[in-house]
Amino acid sequence: MNGEPVRIISGAIHYFRVVPEYWRDRLLKLQACGFNTVETYVAWNVHEPEEGRFCFDGIADVAEFIRLAGELGLHVIVRPSPYICAEWEFGGLPAWLLGYTDMRLRCSDPLYLSKVDAYYDALIPQLKPLLCTNGGPIIAMQIENEYGSYGNDHGYLDYLRRGLIDRSVDVLLFTSDGPTDQMLQGGTLDGVLATVNFGSKAAESFAKFRQYRPDEPLMCMEYWNGWFDHWMEGHHTRDAADVAAVLDEMLEADASVNFYMFHGGTNFGFYNGANHIKTYEPTVTSYDYDSPLTEWGEPAPKYWAVREVLRKHGIAARDIPLPESIPRRSYGQVAMTSCAGLFGQLEKLSAKIARTNPEPMEKLGQNYGYIVYTTQVSGPRRGQELHLQEVHDRAQVFVDGVPVGVVERWNPQPLIVDIPSEGASLTILVENMGRINYGPLLKDYKGITEGVRLDNQFLFGWDIYPLPLNGSWASALEWSDIPQETGELSGPAFYRGTVEAEEPADTFIRLDGWRKGIVFVNGFHLGRYWERGPQKTLYVPGPLLKKGANEIIVFELHGAEASSVALVDTPDLGKAKGVDTAVISFADEE
Image (cartoon, rainbow, N blue to C red; front, side):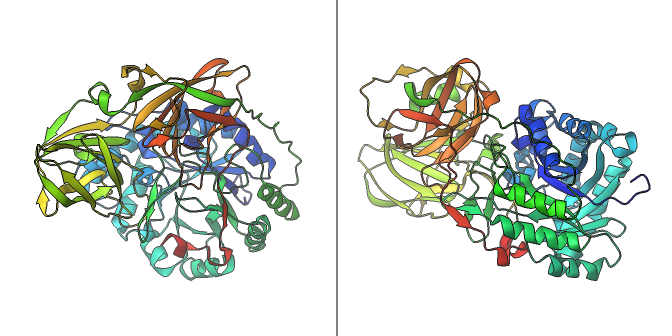
C-alpha cells in the first residue's frame, strides 16, 4: 500500500451480531490488541429480508460500521458473497429464495443470478465510496465463500467477479477455501488472489496451498481460534497458549492472518444457523466462539496471549489503551405478571390459510419462527402411529388441546395416539430452529415438508397459521393477570413482566426452570433458550434497556416451574467442551 508492503493482521467482527452502540468499543479493542484490519461478512438476509425490500439502517448499517473502522485507522476486508456460511441462518441467503422451488443455489442458474444482481445493485453502492481507491478503508473484497466445499462452477465465480468489477469495485479481490485439493480446485479462480482457512497445522495447510499458488502471498483468511456451539452439546473452548502458538507459526512463515472470530457476538432473533453432517444440529444463540473478545466485549485470556505474540513480532508495539470495561449489573428476579395462551389467540396473531396439505413455511411466504397446523380426525382409532413426514425441525403435537408428544427432526419417532369415536382436533406446532448454513443440504424447507399420516393414511384438509412473530405482534394479544400464588406455568404461551433499571447496563437473563422458547426485551428479539443447553443465559446488551420500566416477554413452548426469570451480571455459556486442536481442520466441517 502506497508502495510499502503490508502484512494484514485482521480480526472478524460481524456488525449484524453486535448492537451498533457497541461497534466502536469492539473495534477499539481489536486495535488495542495489535490488529490493523477488521473483517466482516455481509449477510444478504439481513439486508433484503423480503424480496425487493432493502434495509441498511440500525444493526444493518454496514456502511456506518465500515466508516467507523476507517475513522479509527483500521483497514477493512469485506466479504459480501451471496453465501457466507458463518453459522448464520441459511448461510446468509434470504429464506424467500426457497419460494422459487426450481431455483438452483450457488451456481450459474439464471434465476438465482438475477436475484444476486438485484441485491448487489442495492448493496455495492453502499460500499463503493468506502473503497480504498476512493479514499475509504476497504482494501479487499471476497468473490464467494469457501466455494470449493460446495461446487466447482468456475463460470459462476467469474460471474460474481465480473459483477463486482462492473459495479466499479477496483480493490483486491480474493477467494477463501479449505487447504485440500478438492477445495482449492473447485473454489479458486485464475488471476484472483487465493487464501486458505484452517485452525491448526499451519505449515501443512500452507504447503498444500503452495502446490496451487507457488508465488502468491500467504494468508489464512479464517484462523479458527475457537469454535461454535450446537444445542445439546458442550460449550467449546480452546487453550489460549495453543492459539498463540499457531499464530506464531503463521507469522514466522511471513503470512497474513484473519482471526475467525476476534469477537463473535450474538445470533439475535431467529438468525442462528444449523449444521447437518450426520444429523441436523442447530446452533445456539450465543456466538461467543471462545474468541479473544467475549460475547459481552471483555478480553479473554486468549486476547492477551495473542497480543504478546504480535508484540514478539513487532506488530503490536504501540501501547493503545483499552476502552473502559462496559458495566454489567444484576437486576434480580423479575416476576411474569401477565400471560396469553397461544392457541386461544391464534386468530389475533395470524391469518388462517386453508390448504389440502400441511405446506412448509416457504410456500406460504413465511421466513422464520413457528407455524401451527390443525385438522379434524375421524374416530374411533386406537393405538395408531402418527407420522410427521420430514418435519423441520421440532413439532409439538396436541389432540383436543392435550399434549401427546414431541417429534424432533434428529429423532423422528412416530407418536401413538387414540382418537375417540366422535373424532378429535389434531394440532401441530412446529418450530423452525434455523436453516442449514453449510454443506450440500442448504435447501432446508421448514415446517411439515411432506405430510402427516396415521399409520399409512395421509391426512388432508388443514388450517395453517404462520407465526413469524415479527413486527408489533405483541400488541395484538389479550393479556390476563397471573395470580401471584401460581406455581408452574403451562405452555405454549406468552408471559410478560417488567424490570426497573435505574442505570441501564449489560445483563444476562437466566431462565432456570423454563424449558424452551424465545425472549424479547423492549420488543427486541434476543434469541432462543433451551433447558438442554449448553447455554444457560441470554446476553442483554445495555443499550436495549432504558431508564425506568423495561418489558420482558417470554414465549414458552412447554411450561415453567416458576413465574419469574432472573437478570444477573454473570454469563453462563455451559459446561466447557475442549476443542481437539490436533484435528481442527476443514475435516471438522465435513
